[in-house]
Length: 151
Image (cartoon, rainbow, N blue to C red):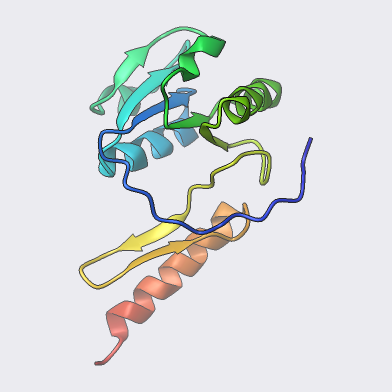
C-alpha cells in the first residue's frame, strides 16, 4: 500500500487540539511525550500501556481500537505493532480528512513527526523522509553546530 508522497513542511499549533495515539509501547510513548509537550489534549487507546505513558497528562483507555475513536480528532497516531491495523487507521483518517501518522510506514500517512530543535533562536524540524535514525543524527550535528557557533 506504499505510495510516493511529497510531505509539505509545516509547523502547527497543537495547543488544546484533540489527538489520539493508538498503541501503548515505546514508540507510542515518544509520540505522546511530543504531543503533550506542545499542548495537545491526548487520548491513548491500547490494551496494554507502558507506565511512562500512564505518567503523562493524558486520557487512557485500556482496550482495542474502534473506528469511532477518531471522531473529532485533529491528529491520530497509529502506533501499534500491527501494520494492517495501522493501515486501517490511516484509511479511516484519510476518509475523514484527519491528519494521521503511521509508525509502520515511511509514506502511508498524511503527517510525519520530525526530529526537532526548539530553542530561543530557532525552531528547526528535520525529516530524513521516514528514516528517524538519520533525522536524529542530523539533529545532534545541528545542535553541536549551534552550540559552537560564533556570532
